[in-house]
Amino acid sequence: MPQLNGADGDDLGANDELIAFKDEGEQEEKRNVSSERDLDDVKSSLVNESETNSGSDSEAPRCSGFVDVCVQADRRPKPDPDVESRAKHSQLFEEALRRRQDGGLFQPSPYVGYPFFMIPDLGNLCSPYLSNGALTPSGRTYLPFQWPLLDVPGRSAVRDSATPTHLSNSVPVVQHPHMTHLHPLLPYSPEAFSPQRASPGFSADTGMSRAPRAACYPISPGGVTQLPHPLGWLQGQPMYPITGGFSPAALAMNASMSGLVSGSFSPRLVPTPQSSIPHPAIVPTGVKQEPGGSGSPTRKSMPGIQQEKEDEKKPHIKKPLNAFMLYMREERPKVVAQCKVKESATINQILGQRWHSLSKEEQAKYYELARKERLLHSKLYPGWSARDNYGKKKKRKRTKSETQREAPAAVEDFSLHLKRPRVPPGPTHTCPRPAPPPPWTRRRPPPQRWPHPPLRPRRTPSTRTPPMDTRHPTPSSCSRCPSPPNPTGPTPSEASSLQDPPRHCPPPTCPPPHPARLLPGVLPPFLVPPPTLTLRSAANSHSALTQPLSLRRANQL
DNA sequence: CCTCCTTTGAAGGGA
DNA sequence: TCCCTTCAAAGGAGG
Image (cartoon, rainbow, N blue to C red; front, side, top):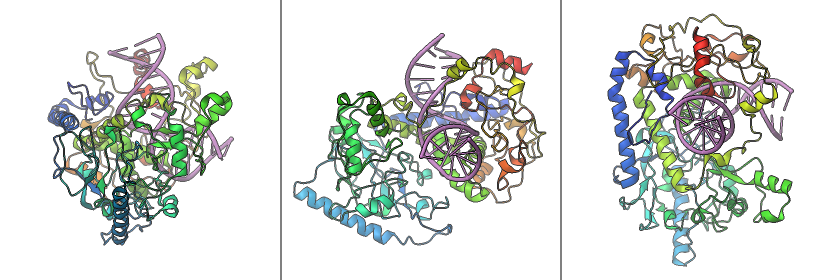
């Protein structure tokens, strides 16, 4: 596991990653030293990149192509039929922009959004993935596009992508070339920029969508390359290139933004009614925005309940995606296409295993992306805290302490909570359990999560996909494990893992169509846990990992 | 309609 | 410092 515990303290990976990789054999570990150094280098370069901005335009990562949402499952490269329309679209936008600037009407949008060009391209600017999840050809095409750079004070606000810029004071919103079909910085609000909503509101006059939305990974090379760089947001005048039509939703949202993060929001970054495009990371919680809802009563004038409701309607800044989430975004469609599985829980299990089967280099790419995303997110929302989103979900899960308070004796008898019978290991997973690390190491021992008292009984344990220990850390011994045949052939990640030998058990093969429903309580072969499978906490994997030492020792006995 | 499931990682608070 | 909790995405399934 790419443990990036550099001296700078800015880790790309979580500390927990130490666990999985620590379990490997010493040889493996030695072999990984260089990789860790590489990751440290990556980290250092990232730090330098963000602090000194030493990148160059020519080196700037390129944006992936954008995509046709409606493209068929055909992955064969083919001319993008939308390029023309996109070009036309951007031409319109440029014109409009010029008009606005010439006429003095162009106002930098104070919208504090991610610096992306979210031009709803009437249906094809959204996700680089096809509707079936496959990556479209255009989504995989690297077109000349300069990633937007985050200006810092002293830099011009508007840039042309063709104009080499700055760099000394900019924070490049870099996307790894390898990952250009990912848009790690824009995962935030899939709803905010959908073409369906955007198209009707599109105005040639403004070149803008009135109601942008987002499944759109908003950067379309075809349309974006010609756009002037909009960003001057760090100068206190955040600009958004596609400002134009007023979005009632955005207005409503903006009107409520000031109280969004408990006053911790930087005033400089608080969107004003002038901004028209909601930040992809700023999404309403639960309730759709009302058209025309440009204002909301002041908080003081609202009674408590009403204020709560109002708060629920307010958008919130979502957390930046971590490396695994970015990986999931990319790989999920592939898994869906390969395995014909739609259940996210199952897919996530597969992805979890695949994630661990990735080489360090592969993972490092995602850690790098995640780090950049966090960096950008922190710059965009200086006062934002992940804590601000607590309770933003529909219904906050009860904490463990809360659960225990209500039923303190509920977890005393572990056997009562072993919902699934132990299943004999299937043929695909015969890796022996790795020896626990020496006690003197500071790294945590491998997770011992079985038996583990589930914190919350599942509603339908017989139909749920049984959890599996995706960390199943048996890299050194896995070389002796027979690789389960993959009928669908290796995925790109698998292929890369082949080039760089997998450090863990091979990724699981595709599950049966409905693995969770084959037999209640019986794991499908691809999900058969290792003999030492531990039941992950239903609510929190990390808690299981960080099981109290006493309990772990008791379990080991 | 709402919540759960399931994954890993990041972040924050409490002890 | 460690432990615990929550959230981020996704979409089917169940209540």
